[in-house]
Image (cartoon, rainbow, N blue to C red; front, side, top):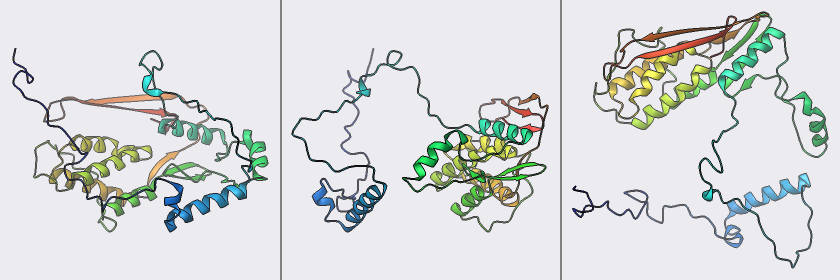
Length: 296
């Protein structure tokens, strides 16, 4: 058997993180001690600001230094073994389907949606005597989603989020179009010339994926555009720009949740067999309704 080691072939040694490292004069320098930090006016101002905030909050008391040795207990995570010390990791981040379900129930049951739990109101009252706190009241803007409550229901939109995306790609003054994509358009991996700024394409598609929170009509199109992240072409970018122009014309639209006292869960699914011309893979999707309200 012939291997790379037998033929004297080995990977080149890497001595730096990038092929073209910046000169040391251009790299930002960080102080290695408090004495060095105090020589910089910016660090001095930052430390003074933090010190002032701590003094105002009265969160510590100045005491004399002890002569005893002090120890710190640390968890050496690099010694943990999969399946023994841990099985899975989970970040407690709220999911869009959870938010839509809770808001749908709030509309149906006429619940008041606030950004402060009433169960901890007593704790907040006590903290307010020591810190400067502000009650945000009813929810109007949450995780980039605007919320407007009315007698007929609740309207969720991401107009500010869409505006930020358009400004980022310099399309704030773009002409709107009536549809997000051409129904007969079938993109392929190799169609068109390579796009000069792949990072711009990837970041734009990544930002558009979050729009499915309130605009499920673009979820499938964004999913198709995301299949060309590795090597986007000019044709792919033009298709992305058409979607952005559609969003410009529907910037105030969103998801409407209406009261559903006796709502039941209904699910619909669909599939498109051998849709993609590159690998002939199929596409499937589903939607879940709580009454007339879309939740997933």
